[in-house]
Structure formats: structure tokens, C-alpha cells
Length: 100
Ligand SMILES: [Zn+2]
Image 1 (cartoon, rainbow, N blue to C red):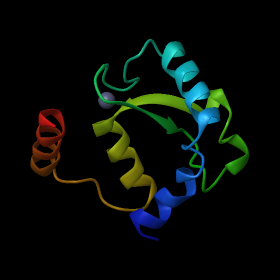
Image 2: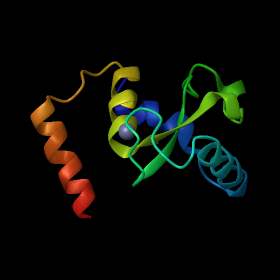
Image 3: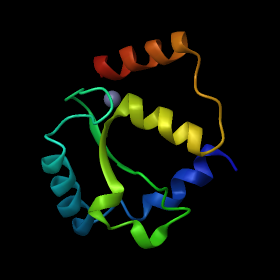
């Protein structure tokens, strides 16, 4: 399964006012920083157990964690069965993200 298919599972969850509300709850709980590296910029909410595997936990605060874009992308790639990007490419990509 490709990355696109994998992401599609959570896309319909992460739209709409209900998601916005629970997203803020998760961010507040985690202190508005990435739980993995402490980054405070570009935070995203991750489903600890992917929506694909546990759709019943899609709205459970216990199944959510705050991650920065870099940590989130890395986790998503691993879950989708793809190899993580080589460190040099990863660094370059995050540089680009910060510049935007
Ligand atoms: Zn991070």
C-alpha cells in the first residue's frame, strides 16, 4: 500500500469542526510541543494507532499525540511500510518546510 492510500484513511477524520476541537485538547495536554523532539513549530496531531488499523480510536484523546511535521512524516512513512528517508534528504526537506 502506498503512502497516498494510507493517508486517505485519516483524511476524512482530520477535516471539520470536531477534529479542530479534539486537536486543541491534544495540543494543550502535550504542552504545545512535539512529544518526540520538543519542537514547537509546525505541530500536527498524530494518531498513535493508525486510523487504518483502529478507526474506533480516531476520536480518542488517548490515541492522539502532538508531533512536529518532521517526526510525523517519519512515523507515517514507517507505518505505511516505506523506508525512512535518508538523513540528508530528511534534513533538506525540513529546511525547506521551515523556510515556507
Ligand atoms: Zn518532532
